[in-house]
Amino acid sequence: MELAQVLDKTQSPSTHLAFVSKMALTRSDLWSLCLANGMDGMILNSCLTVIEKRVDGVFAANSHVIAAWFPPSSTINPMQHLPENAANLQRLLLPAWEPGHSVNLAQILCPGPWASLGVDDVQGLPRQGFSNNCGVFVLMYAFYIVARAQFDFNETNMQQIRHWWCLVLLKNFPMPSEQERSQDCKRRREEKAMQDEEVVRFHKRSRPSFEMGS
Image (cartoon, rainbow, N blue to C red; front, side, top):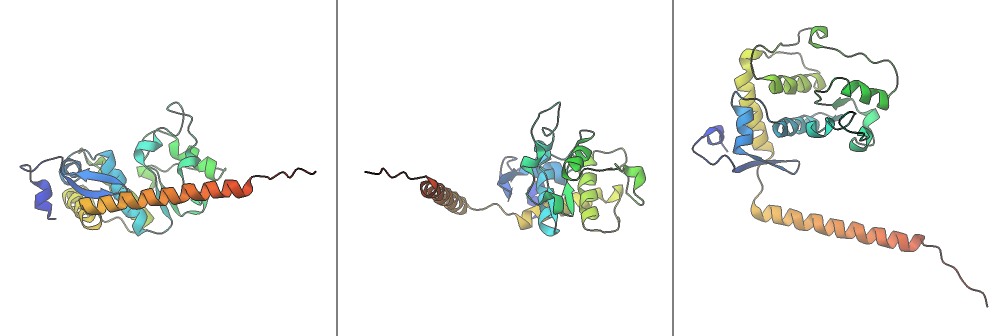
């Protein structure tokens, strides 16, 4: 699909155009990325998924879930939402806006002294001006840091960067056809049924037997 088709305001904003990690992205979702708008959280999660797949040793947490990890929002244990090898990964991407979330999680994974770095602590870090490009900057910070690349973008590049990310999503995560979605649902149901059968067989094998003597 061409970028012009995504940006076409005469087309339905509810049309599904991409499918990322079981999330169907609509034209209006992509408008928050392609146009000079505030980035939608689902779009941010989708782009972080791209980074997670392209760079080894990276896990990107869902921005909608992170907000509920720590009090006062919730008492949910964040470790339940991280991969088992989280402590051994090179990077954990936590798009958190609550102060202290990342430090709290770091203490859980590896207790010890941790330091929080701000924009003034990273040499050469591009700065956001008076714009609504906050989500794009967060995304690019994450991408460049995990890729160990030298920062070479700035505020004037934001429109090109927005379009580039949109094309990345469209190219790498095309919307499956109705038949493909139906086959995928069928496959998932069959896998679930096989797993359930295996659990039942396991419990039967594990059940103690008692023999009555005469």
